[in-house]
Image 1: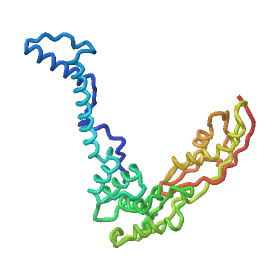
Image 2: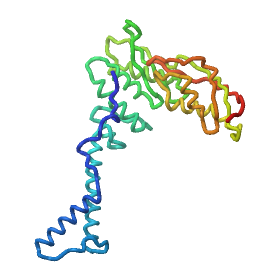
Image 3: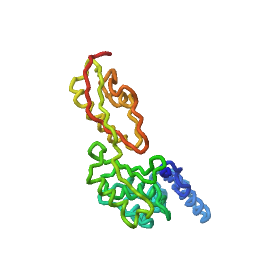
Image 4: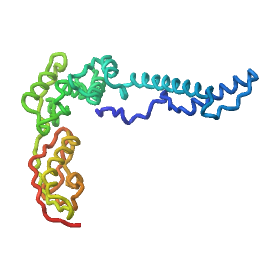
Length: 285
């Protein structure tokens, strides 16, 4: 089951686009009409120093703030836009409670999974939501079966330790999914680390003539940081991705030696990056 991508939804039609100048024009038009009805000449509305216009500008700004507050109150009741305590109250309706230190985006994802997983039978979203709810150290989880085996596999990645879930973290998830109120009676569940392999990277780097050689020390760490941010379950390690991440300012050319081919990762697994061996091959324009 695919998790709903709330960010792909169009903006709600109930949200009003706010324009100060339009509100002011409406107020000035109303003011002009009232003066006309009263038979009072009024033809100085175009002057910035006109006291009536100054009052209308203040009123227009206050109306703008009120309309903005209405927009914000409406958005606070939508799962895609609610943040902070507003999200906490909205998620509580679905029995979702924020973990200590859990950010809005992770909590929002878990709430969607809890909603999707509400079923009389054990579902992939439900077990995934339970796994994510075991600890904020869980980066992601995949729930699947291997072939026709009746056993359910729950593979998890960690936010630290290069994505490798340690025994303590696996035990937390196992306790969560095996809980009597969670596991279906007929389900046999096994919790495993999603990282099945480690890939070492070897590359030759050419720098521009004016680039300091000290950049070589930072390149490996920068790519590892990019991998930690972008990679995860089912994320392939391609030579093109490595070249793109190694082409920092000052780098002229990159040649990937290892891996010798793209490493394709199944959706239920993750790959860890091992050692980085970067060789300064020369300088070129």
